[in-house]
Amino acid sequence: MGEVFNVAAPKSTLYPAAAEVLAEATGKDVLQWRAPVRWVFDLDITKARSWIGYEPQWTIERMIAGAVSLDANRGEQT
Image (tube, rainbow, N blue to C red; front, side, top):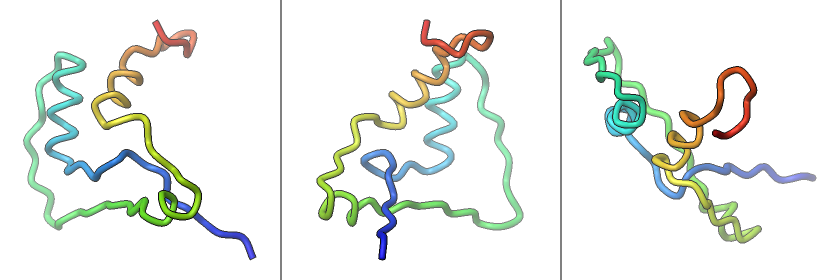
C-alpha cells in the first residue's frame, strides 16, 4: 500500500503570527477578530523527515514573501 506524507513549513505557525507576517509583507493592518471557537490546524512532518528525508526549504515568512511578490496578472515572480 502507498504512504501519505504531510509536507509543510519547518515549524507550525499560529494564525496571529502568520497574520503579522502577512501584514508586514503587504503593508496592511491586521484585523483583530475573536472566533467563537478555537481553531487549530497543525501538520506534523516527522514522518516525511524520517522516511524520505524531507527538509522544508521555505519558512512561513519566505512563503508569504513569495506569494506577495507574484504578479497577479501573469502569475510570475516579480
